[in-house]
Image (cartoon, rainbow over all chains, first blue to last red; front, side):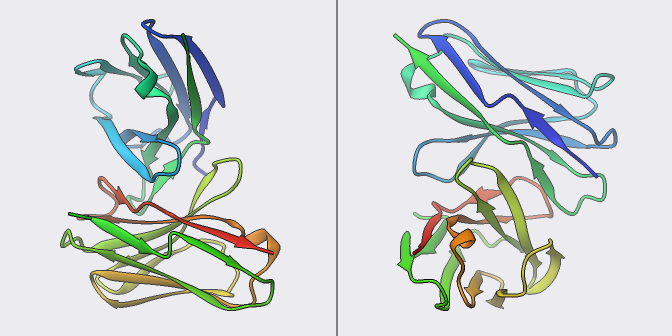
Length: 111
Length: 112
């Protein structure tokens, strides 16, 4: 079945770039997403990328997609304390019936 | 304006009880979902309804029964609650399945 994997934790210094990585198994995924979950809140869509794109940039966020390796990454430039959250990678499965979420990466910011 | 709302936000109850969680969306979306997020933050889809019709039913005990009285509401009823049901339950909606999903704030269920 489809699977989405992420590392569980990432710690970066304030002002540095954060790179959160994700791998997925469904080669026919059409959309890949990054969601952010702040403490005590629901998930918010940060950005998404179509599978026919390699890169998408949106202000401080850069998404890179390597379809051959089934690897997705989210880069946050100039990481701020407000970026502390859990970041979920997700893919739209090939049957287009549901979105499959990764385990989430908890990003913590050091002063 | 709240897009996807859930009630209650917190629910503490004893094992064996029956409880319901309500979800409403005012976005005019056709599809609604229930997710369970466990203590390790793993997020798993439970159910999906499209225009009041069940389209996804993952491997969920039949103690869980979703009910969609209309397109804007998807409630979750849980019978005979067990300790392992303790989790945060998220409702979500989307215009198409399964495009961008809008999540509710979650309901933290604690079974004692």
